[in-house]
Image 1 (cartoon, rainbow, N blue to C red):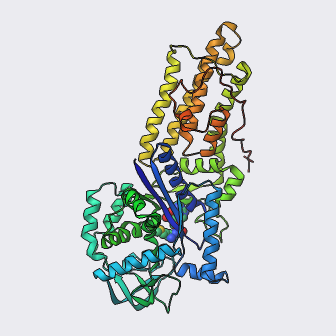
Image 2: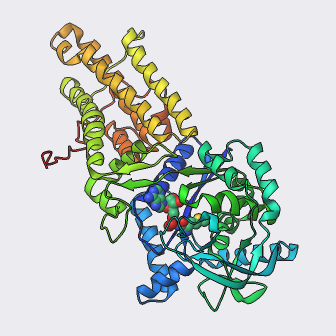
Length: 512
Ligand code: MSP
C-alpha cells in the first residue's frame, strides 16, 4: 500500500497557538485527509518543542519552572488541535522520555564516529533565534528577525562537522529537483551553500542553560535546541516501532514556513547524513501570513487565535479562507474583512445557496424523493458531469503541487457551471407544465449528484461541511456512497432531507 508521512514543525511552547501555527497544521491536515481518502496509509506528526533559552525565559517570566510551563502550553496546543478537528496520528513533545533517549543515542553515535568535536568559539549569539550569527548575516549589526544586536559570546563548546557534508548535500539537492520546494527556497538553500559551510555549535554549557538534553559524553553541557528538535521527525516513528520507521520514513514530507528554512534545509539533512540515515523525501516551504496591522504580536493585540476564529466563523469557513487565500510558497495578508468577504461570497452565496436551492426544489416538487434518470442524457447533463470530472482531475494535479488555492478554484468553477445549469434548464419554470415533470426529476437528480460530488471533493478541505452534505443527502457514512460514479449515487425512491442554511451570511457594517 502506498504510504505518506507528513509533519508540521514542533511549535515552541513560548507562545500560544496562533494563525501561523494553525495554517501549517491545517494544510498538513488537509493533505492527510486527502491521502487517506485516496486509500493511502498516512502518518501525520505534530507536537511541541520545549527545551532551550526561549522556553526557560518564558517560564521565568510566568513565575514557574520550565517543565510545568511546557506541560501547560503543550497541552494547550494539543487541545486546540483536537478542538479544531486536526487528525494528527501522533503528538510528540521533545521532553518525552523516548525522544530524549533517542537524541542521546544519535549524539553518542555521531560523537563516536568523530563528527562531533570540542572547540572554542566566539560569535554573535541571538537569544531570540537561539543561534550564532555570522557577521555577514547581520543587518546593520542586528539580527534580521529580532531587530536586536546579538551578544558576543566566547566559550568552549561541542561542534558538529557540518562542513564535511556540504558537497554531499549540494549533490543531493541537484540530483533531486523537488527535494526542496517551491523552487525559490531550493535556490535559497543552494545560495547558502555557495559559501563554505561552517561547523555547527551543538552544545550550551550548563552554567548558561540547564533546560536541555544533557550530552551523553559530557554532563556539563546540554544539546542545542535544533539538534534536539529536528530529531523528533525520526524519534516519533521509531517510538511506534522499527517497522513504522521503515515504512514511513522514505516518504517523509516536512512542512514549514520560510523562517526555519536553514535548519531544515541544511542542518537536518547533514545531521541525517552523519547519523547514517536516509534523507527525507521533501521539504515543503510556505510563506508568511502578514497582518494588515503589522507583525502579529501580543503587544499589538492582533494575535489571531484559532479557537476564537472557530467560535465566530466556524472551523470550516476559517480553513477555507486559509487554504483559498494563500498561494503556497508566497506571503499572504490576513484581515477579518477579507475573511468575511470570502465567507459571504464563496460560501454563503455560492456553495450554500446552490445546496439549499437544490434541496428546496427536491423537497417542494417531489417531497424529497429522488426521481429516475432516463437511459440517455441530454448534452447539458453530460456537460455538467464532465465539468465535475474535469474539476476533480485538476484538483488532483493542484494538490500534488500544493496549490490548494487553485484546487479550490477548480471546485468553485464547477460550482459556477452548476449554477448556470440551473438557470439554463430552469426547473422552477418547467415544473409548471405537468408533461415536463419527469425532466425536472432528472435535472434535480443531476443536481443531487453535484451535491454528492461536492461532499467528496470538499472532504479534505472542509470536512464538517462535506459530512453535513452527505448527511443531508441521507447517504451512509462510508466511502462507496461518495465514490460511486455519477448517476449511480442514488436509487430512485431514495428519500432525502429538506434544505438547511450551511453558511449564514455575516452582516457587516459596510460603511464603517
Ligand atoms: N520550534 C521551532 C521548529 C522546530 S521543528 C523541528 C519553531 N517553532 S515556532 O513555534 O516558531 O513555529 C514556527 C512555524 O510556525 C513556522 O515555520 C510556521 O510553520 C508557523 N508560523 C509561525 N508564524 C507564521 C506566520 N506568520 N505565517 C505562517 N506560518 C508561520 O520554529
